[in-house]
Image (cartoon, rainbow, N blue to C red; front, side, top):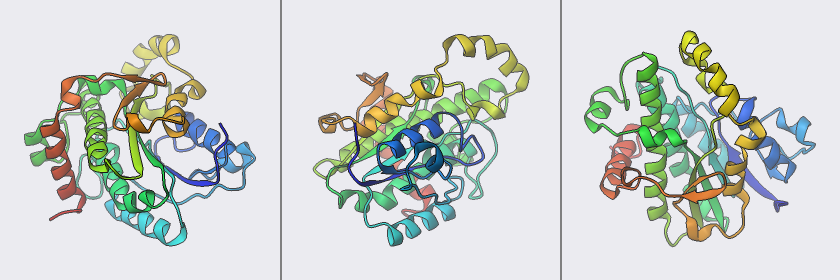
Length: 281
């Protein structure tokens, strides 16, 4: 599928495999199809000169706002926003948010909201929120969120895994609520499980645990090219507009558990996210 001239924002968290793996393969494919993708080294490999790099640190709300301000001043249109960044590590952002909640959810939440008007001006445009199947194991504890500004606590392997899954549930819940709020506009949104990718996402996980899991990774995980296909499907496939708000895996719509489409939870998460991102007082 050849893309018409359009502008794409493809985000990533630069400390964690920004120019490798599924992020690179998705941006490379988009650039080859004619999109302006936000990865500097994609230009050479794609053969496309219509590639622009703009710095964006999703662990900094100031950086997100600065990026959005610069983008809105310099770019006349935005056709596709792919919220792809993801980390699996402990720590806090410069705004005091838990690292996984701050990068995996709040950064995307703020960025999307700051760019929605621009997206809506371009006719049919899309937001793609990359989640993962781990959201099925996630829960949202609002008491923990209010007290720790994170969706989990602890730094053991299982603690990190649980918090990561909780942050991925935030992605799916965000997409569900976003689709409702976008109803009747020119913008549609989709979330997805890209497949288990043997990427650099897990660099922050205990090395012993990673050694034990390596045989499983080699047997089960997709390569980067295969792992980017569902993201590309949600970004490029024609006729997906009636499926706005849906969750995809292997380029197919999948049902989600009730907890991932709970209207009361999505509304509350949205309100908390507005407050923590500074969109509301």
